[in-house]
Image (cartoon, rainbow, N blue to C red; front, top):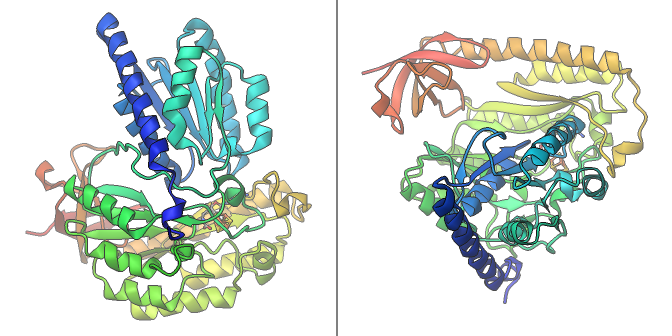
Length: 476
Ligand code: SAH
Ligand code: SF4
Protein backbone atom coordinates (compact mmCIF):
# COMPACT_ATOMS: atom_id res chain seq x y z
CA UNK A 1 0.00 0.00 0.00
CA UNK A 2 1.48 3.39 -0.92
CA UNK A 3 1.33 6.39 1.35
CA UNK A 4 -1.61 7.98 -0.45
CA UNK A 5 -3.76 4.85 -0.12
CA UNK A 6 -2.88 4.69 3.51
CA UNK A 7 -4.47 8.02 4.40
CA UNK A 8 -8.15 7.20 4.01
CA UNK A 9 -10.48 6.32 6.84
CA UNK A 10 -11.10 2.61 6.29
CA UNK A 11 -14.12 1.97 4.05
CA UNK A 12 -15.45 -0.41 6.73
CA UNK A 13 -15.70 2.48 9.18
CA UNK A 14 -17.60 4.65 6.65
CA UNK A 15 -19.85 1.64 5.88
CA UNK A 16 -20.60 1.29 9.60
CA UNK A 17 -21.67 4.94 9.73
CA UNK A 18 -23.86 4.41 6.65
CA UNK A 19 -25.62 1.55 8.46
CA UNK A 20 -26.32 3.87 11.39
CA UNK A 21 -27.66 6.50 8.96
CA UNK A 22 -30.19 3.86 7.82
CA UNK A 23 -31.13 3.18 11.43
CA UNK A 24 -31.61 6.93 12.02
CA UNK A 25 -33.70 7.06 8.85
CA UNK A 26 -36.01 4.31 10.15
CA UNK A 27 -36.29 6.18 13.45
CA UNK A 28 -37.09 9.45 11.65
CA UNK A 29 -39.60 7.68 9.39
CA UNK A 30 -41.43 6.26 12.40
CA UNK A 31 -41.60 9.76 13.95
CA UNK A 32 -42.98 10.99 10.63
CA UNK A 33 -45.58 8.26 10.59
CA UNK A 34 -46.70 9.38 14.03
CA UNK A 35 -46.70 13.17 13.50
CA UNK A 36 -47.00 13.54 9.69
CA UNK A 37 -44.16 16.02 9.94
CA UNK A 38 -40.50 15.44 9.15
CA UNK A 39 -38.07 16.30 11.91
CA UNK A 40 -36.24 19.51 11.06
CA UNK A 41 -32.54 20.26 11.33
CA UNK A 42 -30.79 23.62 11.45
CA UNK A 43 -27.06 23.74 10.67
CA UNK A 44 -25.45 27.10 11.45
CA UNK A 45 -21.98 27.71 10.02
CA UNK A 46 -19.38 30.16 11.33
CA UNK A 47 -16.07 31.02 9.69
CA UNK A 48 -14.44 30.05 6.45
CA UNK A 49 -15.42 28.19 3.30
CA UNK A 50 -13.87 25.00 4.65
CA UNK A 51 -16.48 25.11 7.39
CA UNK A 52 -19.20 25.79 4.82
CA UNK A 53 -17.97 22.74 2.96
CA UNK A 54 -18.00 20.63 6.14
CA UNK A 55 -21.57 21.80 6.78
CA UNK A 56 -22.57 20.51 3.35
CA UNK A 57 -21.40 17.08 4.48
CA UNK A 58 -23.25 17.43 7.79
CA UNK A 59 -26.43 18.28 5.85
CA UNK A 60 -25.73 15.37 3.51
CA UNK A 61 -25.59 12.97 6.46
CA UNK A 62 -28.69 14.48 8.10
CA UNK A 63 -30.65 14.49 4.83
CA UNK A 64 -29.94 10.79 4.31
CA UNK A 65 -30.90 10.18 7.93
CA UNK A 66 -34.36 11.54 7.17
CA UNK A 67 -34.21 15.14 8.37
CA UNK A 68 -35.63 18.10 6.49
CA UNK A 69 -34.07 21.51 6.99
CA UNK A 70 -35.26 24.81 8.45
CA UNK A 71 -33.88 28.30 9.06
CA UNK A 72 -35.01 28.98 12.58
CA UNK A 73 -33.99 27.51 15.93
CA UNK A 74 -37.60 27.68 17.14
CA UNK A 75 -38.70 25.24 14.41
CA UNK A 76 -35.73 22.88 14.66
CA UNK A 77 -35.66 19.43 16.33
CA UNK A 78 -31.89 19.30 15.82
CA UNK A 79 -29.53 22.28 15.91
CA UNK A 80 -25.85 22.00 14.99
CA UNK A 81 -23.38 24.86 15.34
CA UNK A 82 -20.35 24.38 13.10
CA UNK A 83 -17.87 26.71 14.75
CA UNK A 84 -14.80 28.80 13.98
CA UNK A 85 -11.83 29.34 16.30
CA UNK A 86 -9.82 31.85 14.27
CA UNK A 87 -10.96 34.87 16.28
CA UNK A 88 -12.41 35.26 19.76
CA UNK A 89 -15.49 37.16 18.54
CA UNK A 90 -16.81 34.14 16.65
CA UNK A 91 -16.34 31.94 19.73
CA UNK A 92 -18.22 34.39 21.93
CA UNK A 93 -21.13 34.46 19.51
CA UNK A 94 -21.38 30.66 19.67
CA UNK A 95 -21.32 30.67 23.47
CA UNK A 96 -24.03 33.35 23.45
CA UNK A 97 -26.23 31.27 21.12
CA UNK A 98 -25.58 28.06 23.06
CA UNK A 99 -26.53 29.81 26.30
CA UNK A 100 -29.78 31.04 24.75
CA UNK A 101 -30.68 27.46 23.79
CA UNK A 102 -30.69 26.33 27.44
CA UNK A 103 -34.17 27.78 27.86
CA UNK A 104 -35.36 26.27 24.55
CA UNK A 105 -34.14 22.85 25.68
CA UNK A 106 -36.05 23.16 28.98
CA UNK A 107 -39.21 23.88 27.01
CA UNK A 108 -38.56 21.10 24.49
CA UNK A 109 -36.48 18.30 26.09
CA UNK A 110 -36.55 16.37 22.80
CA UNK A 111 -34.46 19.09 21.09
CA UNK A 112 -30.99 17.80 20.14
CA UNK A 113 -28.13 20.31 20.25
CA UNK A 114 -24.78 19.66 18.60
CA UNK A 115 -21.59 21.68 18.44
CA UNK A 116 -18.75 20.87 16.10
CA UNK A 117 -15.87 22.35 14.12
CA UNK A 118 -12.69 24.17 15.06
CA UNK A 119 -13.75 25.55 18.44
CA UNK A 120 -14.24 22.14 19.99
CA UNK A 121 -10.81 20.94 18.81
CA UNK A 122 -9.50 23.09 21.68
CA UNK A 123 -9.39 21.25 24.98
CA UNK A 124 -10.22 24.27 27.14
CA UNK A 125 -13.35 24.93 25.07
CA UNK A 126 -14.61 21.33 25.15
CA UNK A 127 -14.08 21.29 28.92
CA UNK A 128 -16.06 24.51 29.28
CA UNK A 129 -18.95 23.12 27.21
CA UNK A 130 -19.05 19.89 29.19
CA UNK A 131 -19.09 21.80 32.48
CA UNK A 132 -21.30 24.79 31.72
CA UNK A 133 -23.45 23.81 28.76
CA UNK A 134 -24.82 20.47 29.89
CA UNK A 135 -27.82 20.87 27.57
CA UNK A 136 -25.50 20.12 24.62
CA UNK A 137 -26.02 16.56 23.32
CA UNK A 138 -23.30 16.09 20.71
CA UNK A 139 -19.74 17.40 20.37
CA UNK A 140 -17.57 16.42 17.43
CA UNK A 141 -14.40 17.90 15.96
CA UNK A 142 -13.14 18.59 12.47
CA UNK A 143 -11.45 15.19 12.31
CA UNK A 144 -14.45 13.14 13.36
CA UNK A 145 -17.27 14.61 11.30
CA UNK A 146 -17.76 11.22 9.67
CA UNK A 147 -18.82 9.82 13.06
CA UNK A 148 -21.83 12.13 13.27
CA UNK A 149 -24.36 9.31 12.61
CA UNK A 150 -23.02 7.28 15.53
CA UNK A 151 -22.99 10.29 17.87
CA UNK A 152 -26.48 11.30 16.86
CA UNK A 153 -27.70 7.76 17.46
CA UNK A 154 -26.10 7.68 20.91
CA UNK A 155 -27.69 11.04 21.72
CA UNK A 156 -31.19 9.97 20.71
CA UNK A 157 -31.12 6.40 22.00
CA UNK A 158 -29.13 6.79 25.21
CA UNK A 159 -29.97 10.43 26.04
CA UNK A 160 -26.42 11.30 27.06
CA UNK A 161 -23.81 13.72 25.80
CA UNK A 162 -21.92 12.04 22.92
CA UNK A 163 -18.42 13.37 22.35
CA UNK A 164 -15.77 12.67 19.70
CA UNK A 165 -13.05 15.29 19.32
CA UNK A 166 -9.85 13.27 18.83
CA UNK A 167 -7.48 13.51 15.90
CA UNK A 168 -7.61 10.69 13.37
CA UNK A 169 -3.90 10.55 12.64
CA UNK A 170 -4.22 12.52 9.43
CA UNK A 171 -6.81 10.22 7.90
CA UNK A 172 -9.27 11.55 5.32
CA UNK A 173 -12.91 10.44 5.16
CA UNK A 174 -13.94 10.03 1.51
CA UNK A 175 -17.41 9.30 0.13
CA UNK A 176 -19.40 11.04 2.83
CA UNK A 177 -22.90 12.12 1.82
CA UNK A 178 -23.05 15.76 0.72
CA UNK A 179 -25.92 18.19 0.24
CA UNK A 180 -24.97 21.35 -1.62
CA UNK A 181 -27.10 24.47 -1.91
CA UNK A 182 -27.53 24.10 -5.66
CA UNK A 183 -26.91 26.86 -8.17
CA UNK A 184 -23.86 27.31 -10.37
CA UNK A 185 -20.99 27.21 -7.85
CA UNK A 186 -19.64 24.39 -5.71
CA UNK A 187 -16.75 24.14 -3.27
CA UNK A 188 -14.48 21.09 -3.19
CA UNK A 189 -11.78 20.57 -0.56
CA UNK A 190 -8.53 19.34 -2.04
CA UNK A 191 -6.61 19.16 1.22
CA UNK A 192 -7.06 19.58 4.93
CA UNK A 193 -4.94 21.05 7.71
CA UNK A 194 -1.95 23.38 7.73
CA UNK A 195 1.75 23.01 8.57
CA UNK A 196 2.66 26.69 8.62
CA UNK A 197 2.14 27.72 12.22
CA UNK A 198 1.86 31.45 11.63
CA UNK A 199 2.44 32.78 15.12
CA UNK A 200 -1.07 34.24 15.54
CA UNK A 201 -3.07 31.36 14.07
CA UNK A 202 -4.92 28.50 15.71
CA UNK A 203 -5.71 26.63 12.48
CA UNK A 204 -2.77 24.17 12.53
CA UNK A 205 -3.78 23.17 16.08
CA UNK A 206 -7.46 22.66 15.36
CA UNK A 207 -7.29 21.31 11.81
CA UNK A 208 -4.10 19.28 12.21
CA UNK A 209 -1.26 18.61 9.78
CA UNK A 210 -1.60 19.02 6.02
CA UNK A 211 -3.05 16.07 4.16
CA UNK A 212 -4.04 15.99 0.51
CA UNK A 213 -6.89 14.11 -1.07
CA UNK A 214 -5.86 11.83 -3.91
CA UNK A 215 -6.28 13.39 -7.38
CA UNK A 216 -8.62 10.54 -8.42
CA UNK A 217 -10.97 11.19 -5.51
CA UNK A 218 -11.04 14.92 -6.30
CA UNK A 219 -11.65 14.29 -10.01
CA UNK A 220 -14.46 11.87 -9.20
CA UNK A 221 -16.14 14.58 -7.13
CA UNK A 222 -15.57 17.21 -9.84
CA UNK A 223 -17.18 14.96 -12.48
CA UNK A 224 -20.06 14.38 -10.11
CA UNK A 225 -20.72 18.10 -9.53
CA UNK A 226 -20.40 18.80 -13.26
CA UNK A 227 -23.05 16.13 -13.88
CA UNK A 228 -25.27 17.81 -11.31
CA UNK A 229 -25.04 21.02 -13.36
CA UNK A 230 -22.48 23.08 -11.45
CA UNK A 231 -20.38 25.26 -13.77
CA UNK A 232 -17.86 26.74 -11.36
CA UNK A 233 -15.75 25.14 -8.68
CA UNK A 234 -13.77 26.63 -5.82
CA UNK A 235 -10.92 24.33 -4.80
CA UNK A 236 -10.29 24.70 -1.09
CA UNK A 237 -7.30 24.27 1.19
CA UNK A 238 -5.59 26.34 3.91
CA UNK A 239 -2.51 26.52 1.69
CA UNK A 240 -3.31 25.00 -1.69
CA UNK A 241 0.29 25.50 -2.85
CA UNK A 242 1.25 22.68 -0.49
CA UNK A 243 -1.13 20.29 -2.21
CA UNK A 244 0.43 16.93 -2.97
CA UNK A 245 3.55 17.25 -0.80
CA UNK A 246 2.30 14.23 1.15
CA UNK A 247 1.34 12.22 -1.95
CA UNK A 248 4.86 11.13 -2.82
CA UNK A 249 5.10 13.22 -6.00
CA UNK A 250 1.82 12.02 -7.58
CA UNK A 251 0.73 15.58 -8.38
CA UNK A 252 1.30 19.13 -7.16
CA UNK A 253 -1.34 21.85 -7.16
CA UNK A 254 -0.52 23.03 -10.70
CA UNK A 255 -0.91 19.44 -11.94
CA UNK A 256 -4.21 19.16 -10.12
CA UNK A 257 -5.47 22.37 -11.74
CA UNK A 258 -4.51 20.93 -15.13
CA UNK A 259 -6.49 17.75 -14.39
CA UNK A 260 -9.47 19.71 -13.05
CA UNK A 261 -9.54 21.84 -16.21
CA UNK A 262 -10.11 18.68 -18.24
CA UNK A 263 -13.38 17.89 -16.48
CA UNK A 264 -16.14 18.48 -19.00
CA UNK A 265 -18.89 20.81 -17.83
CA UNK A 266 -16.73 22.70 -15.34
CA UNK A 267 -16.27 26.09 -16.99
CA UNK A 268 -14.57 28.07 -14.26
CA UNK A 269 -12.04 27.15 -11.60
CA UNK A 270 -11.12 29.27 -8.59
CA UNK A 271 -9.02 28.29 -5.60
CA UNK A 272 -8.09 29.50 -2.15
CA UNK A 273 -5.98 30.03 -0.20
CA UNK A 274 -2.54 30.52 -1.72
CA UNK A 275 0.31 31.19 0.67
CA UNK A 276 2.78 33.76 -0.71
CA UNK A 277 5.83 31.77 0.40
CA UNK A 278 4.79 28.74 -1.69
CA UNK A 279 3.12 30.55 -4.58
CA UNK A 280 5.50 29.63 -7.40
CA UNK A 281 6.29 30.26 -11.07
CA UNK A 282 4.81 26.93 -12.16
CA UNK A 283 1.45 27.92 -10.70
CA UNK A 284 1.62 31.39 -12.28
CA UNK A 285 2.28 29.77 -15.68
CA UNK A 286 -0.55 27.27 -15.19
CA UNK A 287 -2.93 30.10 -14.34
CA UNK A 288 -1.81 32.07 -17.40
CA UNK A 289 -2.16 29.10 -19.76
CA UNK A 290 -5.47 27.64 -18.66
CA UNK A 291 -8.54 29.63 -19.77
CA UNK A 292 -10.81 27.89 -17.25
CA UNK A 293 -8.79 29.25 -14.31
CA UNK A 294 -10.41 32.52 -13.27
CA UNK A 295 -8.63 35.88 -13.21
CA UNK A 296 -8.74 36.03 -9.45
CA UNK A 297 -5.98 35.43 -6.96
CA UNK A 298 -6.45 35.52 -3.20
CA UNK A 299 -2.96 35.96 -1.77
CA UNK A 300 -3.07 36.99 1.91
CA UNK A 301 -0.18 39.28 2.80
CA UNK A 302 -1.24 39.95 6.44
CA UNK A 303 1.13 42.94 6.98
CA UNK A 304 3.37 45.37 5.12
CA UNK A 305 6.32 45.52 7.51
CA UNK A 306 9.15 42.99 7.33
CA UNK A 307 9.49 42.98 11.09
CA UNK A 308 5.84 42.09 11.61
CA UNK A 309 5.94 39.49 8.81
CA UNK A 310 8.92 37.89 10.54
CA UNK A 311 7.19 37.97 13.94
CA UNK A 312 4.14 36.41 12.30
CA UNK A 313 6.36 33.60 10.94
CA UNK A 314 5.02 34.14 7.44
CA UNK A 315 8.22 33.10 5.63
CA UNK A 316 8.42 35.97 3.10
CA UNK A 317 9.35 39.64 3.02
CA UNK A 318 7.46 42.60 1.63
CA UNK A 319 9.84 42.60 -1.36
CA UNK A 320 9.21 38.86 -2.00
CA UNK A 321 5.49 39.51 -1.99
CA UNK A 322 5.69 42.51 -4.31
CA UNK A 323 7.87 40.55 -6.72
CA UNK A 324 5.28 37.75 -6.94
CA UNK A 325 2.48 40.23 -7.56
CA UNK A 326 4.45 41.91 -10.30
CA UNK A 327 5.16 38.54 -11.96
CA UNK A 328 1.47 37.69 -11.87
CA UNK A 329 0.49 41.04 -13.32
CA UNK A 330 3.12 41.02 -16.04
CA UNK A 331 1.70 37.72 -17.34
CA UNK A 332 -1.96 38.35 -16.50
CA UNK A 333 -2.68 42.10 -16.37
CA UNK A 334 -6.40 41.47 -15.88
CA UNK A 335 -5.85 39.48 -12.66
CA UNK A 336 -7.90 40.68 -9.67
CA UNK A 337 -5.83 40.30 -6.53
CA UNK A 338 -7.38 40.13 -3.07
CA UNK A 339 -5.78 39.74 0.34
CA UNK A 340 -6.15 39.32 4.10
CA UNK A 341 -4.67 41.86 6.52
CA UNK A 342 -4.31 41.66 10.30
CA UNK A 343 -4.34 45.00 12.11
CA UNK A 344 -2.83 45.24 15.58
CA UNK A 345 -0.54 42.21 15.68
CA UNK A 346 1.13 42.63 19.13
CA UNK A 347 4.52 43.80 17.82
CA UNK A 348 2.99 46.19 15.26
CA UNK A 349 4.04 49.82 15.88
CA UNK A 350 2.57 52.99 14.34
CA UNK A 351 5.38 52.89 11.78
CA UNK A 352 4.70 49.21 10.93
CA UNK A 353 1.07 50.02 10.34
CA UNK A 354 2.02 52.86 7.97
CA UNK A 355 3.91 50.24 5.99
CA UNK A 356 0.76 48.14 5.69
CA UNK A 357 -1.08 51.20 4.34
CA UNK A 358 1.72 51.91 1.88
CA UNK A 359 1.63 48.28 0.73
CA UNK A 360 -2.09 48.64 0.01
CA UNK A 361 -1.34 51.73 -2.07
CA UNK A 362 1.49 49.99 -3.87
CA UNK A 363 -0.32 46.73 -4.69
CA UNK A 364 -3.82 48.18 -5.14
CA UNK A 365 -5.76 45.07 -4.18
CA UNK A 366 -9.24 44.66 -5.62
CA UNK A 367 -10.47 43.99 -2.11
CA UNK A 368 -9.12 43.09 1.30
CA UNK A 369 -10.50 41.10 4.22
CA UNK A 370 -9.17 42.93 7.27
CA UNK A 371 -9.19 41.60 10.80
CA UNK A 372 -8.24 43.04 14.15
CA UNK A 373 -5.72 40.74 15.80
CA UNK A 374 -7.30 38.32 18.24
CA UNK A 375 -5.19 36.50 20.84
CA UNK A 376 -5.52 32.71 20.49
CA UNK A 377 -4.77 30.15 23.19
CA UNK A 378 -1.74 27.99 22.49
CA UNK A 379 -0.26 30.11 19.70
CA UNK A 380 3.24 31.60 19.81
CA UNK A 381 1.89 35.17 19.70
CA UNK A 382 -0.28 34.52 22.75
CA UNK A 383 2.49 35.59 25.11
CA UNK A 384 3.34 38.81 23.26
CA UNK A 385 2.30 42.09 24.88
CA UNK A 386 0.67 44.56 22.48
CA UNK A 387 2.63 47.70 21.60
CA UNK A 388 -0.39 49.77 20.53
CA UNK A 389 -3.42 50.57 22.65
CA UNK A 390 -6.76 49.04 21.64
CA UNK A 391 -8.14 52.45 20.72
CA UNK A 392 -5.25 53.08 18.31
CA UNK A 393 -5.66 49.65 16.74
CA UNK A 394 -9.36 50.30 16.11
CA UNK A 395 -8.58 53.72 14.61
CA UNK A 396 -5.94 52.09 12.37
CA UNK A 397 -8.48 49.49 11.29
CA UNK A 398 -10.89 52.26 10.22
CA UNK A 399 -8.12 54.04 8.35
CA UNK A 400 -7.24 50.84 6.51
CA UNK A 401 -10.86 50.32 5.49
CA UNK A 402 -11.12 53.87 4.18
CA UNK A 403 -7.93 53.54 2.12
CA UNK A 404 -8.95 50.16 0.72
CA UNK A 405 -12.55 51.15 -0.04
CA UNK A 406 -11.31 54.02 -2.15
CA UNK A 407 -8.95 51.72 -4.08
CA UNK A 408 -11.70 49.10 -4.57
CA UNK A 409 -14.04 51.78 -5.92
CA UNK A 410 -11.38 53.17 -8.27
CA UNK A 411 -10.67 49.67 -9.63
CA UNK A 412 -14.40 49.01 -10.09
CA UNK A 413 -14.73 52.36 -11.90
CA UNK A 414 -12.14 51.13 -14.40
CA UNK A 415 -14.68 48.44 -15.47
CA UNK A 416 -17.13 51.13 -16.66
CA UNK A 417 -18.06 50.97 -20.33
CA UNK A 418 -16.32 47.61 -20.88
CA UNK A 419 -17.95 44.27 -21.66
CA UNK A 420 -17.32 41.20 -19.47
CA UNK A 421 -18.37 37.57 -19.56
CA UNK A 422 -20.63 37.02 -16.55
CA UNK A 423 -21.62 33.59 -15.26
CA UNK A 424 -25.21 34.14 -14.14
CA UNK A 425 -25.98 32.82 -10.65
CA UNK A 426 -29.69 33.68 -10.58
CA UNK A 427 -31.96 36.30 -9.10
CA UNK A 428 -30.35 38.80 -6.77
CA UNK A 429 -31.30 38.08 -3.13
CA UNK A 430 -31.62 41.81 -2.44
CA UNK A 431 -33.73 42.58 -5.51
CA UNK A 432 -35.42 39.63 -7.23
CA UNK A 433 -36.17 41.81 -10.28
CA UNK A 434 -32.47 41.73 -11.20
CA UNK A 435 -30.08 38.91 -11.99
CA UNK A 436 -26.70 38.54 -10.41
CA UNK A 437 -23.49 36.89 -11.55
CA UNK A 438 -19.74 37.22 -11.48
CA UNK A 439 -16.97 38.14 -13.85
CA UNK A 440 -13.97 35.85 -14.09
CA UNK A 441 -12.24 38.33 -11.77
CA UNK A 442 -14.88 37.63 -9.14
CA UNK A 443 -16.74 40.96 -9.34
CA UNK A 444 -20.45 40.80 -8.60
CA UNK A 445 -22.49 42.16 -11.52
CA UNK A 446 -26.22 42.95 -11.23
CA UNK A 447 -28.29 43.44 -14.35
CA UNK A 448 -31.76 43.01 -15.82
CA UNK A 449 -32.37 39.78 -17.69
CA UNK A 450 -34.55 36.73 -18.12
CA UNK A 451 -34.51 34.21 -15.21
CA UNK A 452 -33.63 31.39 -17.65
CA UNK A 453 -30.21 32.97 -18.07
CA UNK A 454 -29.20 31.38 -14.73
CA UNK A 455 -26.29 29.00 -15.29
CA UNK A 456 -25.33 30.63 -18.59
CA UNK A 457 -22.46 32.92 -19.39
CA UNK A 458 -23.60 36.20 -20.91
CA UNK A 459 -21.79 39.35 -22.08
CA UNK A 460 -22.57 42.33 -19.90
CA UNK A 461 -21.55 45.95 -20.45
CA UNK A 462 -20.76 47.68 -17.16
CA UNK A 463 -22.81 50.85 -16.68
CA UNK A 464 -22.32 51.68 -12.98
CA UNK A 465 -19.79 50.80 -10.30
CA UNK A 466 -19.93 50.69 -6.51
CA UNK A 467 -17.27 49.63 -3.99
CA UNK A 468 -18.52 46.04 -3.74
CA UNK A 469 -20.46 45.45 -6.96
CA UNK A 470 -21.07 46.49 -10.55
CA UNK A 471 -24.21 47.08 -12.60
CA UNK A 472 -24.58 46.41 -16.29
CA UNK A 473 -26.63 45.69 -19.38
CA UNK A 474 -26.72 42.40 -21.26
CA UNK A 475 -25.24 42.65 -24.78
CA UNK A 476 -27.27 40.88 -27.44
N1 SAH B 1 -4.88 29.69 5.42
C1 SAH B 1 -5.30 30.97 5.06
C2 SAH B 1 -6.45 31.52 5.91
C3 SAH B 1 -6.47 31.27 7.36
S1 SAH B 1 -7.63 32.04 8.38
C4 SAH B 1 -4.10 31.88 5.03
O1 SAH B 1 -3.05 31.55 5.47
O2 SAH B 1 -4.22 32.95 4.49
C5 SAH B 1 -8.17 33.44 7.46
C6 SAH B 1 -7.59 34.74 7.90
O3 SAH B 1 -7.91 35.01 9.23
C7 SAH B 1 -6.06 34.81 7.86
O4 SAH B 1 -5.57 35.04 6.58
C8 SAH B 1 -5.78 35.95 8.79
O5 SAH B 1 -5.78 37.19 8.12
C9 SAH B 1 -6.96 35.90 9.76
N2 SAH B 1 -6.54 35.44 11.08
C10 SAH B 1 -6.01 34.23 11.41
N3 SAH B 1 -5.72 34.19 12.72
C11 SAH B 1 -6.07 35.41 13.23
C12 SAH B 1 -6.01 36.00 14.54
N4 SAH B 1 -5.52 35.33 15.56
N5 SAH B 1 -6.46 37.27 14.67
C13 SAH B 1 -6.96 37.96 13.63
N6 SAH B 1 -7.03 37.46 12.39
C14 SAH B 1 -6.60 36.19 12.19
FE1 SF4 C 1 -3.17 29.94 9.72
FE2 SF4 C 1 -0.88 30.58 8.55
FE3 SF4 C 1 -1.91 28.14 8.19
FE4 SF4 C 1 -3.11 30.26 7.08
S1 SF4 C 1 -1.04 29.50 6.61
S2 SF4 C 1 -4.09 28.60 8.22
S3 SF4 C 1 -2.77 31.85 8.60
S4 SF4 C 1 -1.15 28.99 10.08
